[in-house]
Length: 337
Image (tube, rainbow, N blue to C red):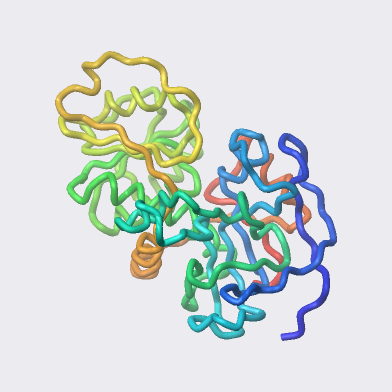
């Protein structure tokens, strides 16, 4: 494949300012990297946290985006697991060292030297990107690129949260019905779990969306479900949902906070936590999470609802996500799908 010298990319030059469309040099792959012609890149709430300055250590100037689908355009000299033309997916975890105490005990998601796509290294809001071949996923033929892109974070982080919630959680609550929840609902229903969807109070549109995907109940986050939950996953970045979810789970229940950023959790009475309820967070993902989810997603099959934007409309996608106007997932398409 003939690779040009420059590409279009949406750059974050300073937090709390709009992204700027710029012409920049196309990166060249290092020995362990692949160069990817980006076809689609999901727009994640984490991107919004970065742009809004809520995640405070981005590499600047930065090309955001960490739900990348494309094809390999060039390979570094040490790459053995990809060939030119392969369909590839790139997730949030860009690199883990393999040597720190966390990596050595199988927790590469907590690596002390980790790098993150679209945060500490450039991501996929561009026509091309480079990625470490060892942390990229082969993607089989299947759904279109725009429909597959949200799998690379909403799907993978959602699936990690789902695993941590526990295999015995038959009644599962999902707080915040966006990209991750609408993917995860399909997996849970496929595995014959009962999904209870919680949206913003009065959001009948998303409640109807959840029911169409198989949720047995959908209501506002200010409501109690008709049955006690075995576990709940909070995707909305709203700290006050933690005590709300604790009220909804039964004895021994788990509340999983699935986001990278959340507003402060208000104080709550110990009685909500008593009887062996637990609250825990999810940080990043492991390659095992990706392999497992990418195996099960086609079996379900997961069908991602997307709102597609051109690369130069990345700011519109971020605004719509911020304002709650996206049903399903927002995705940038580079016109190659």
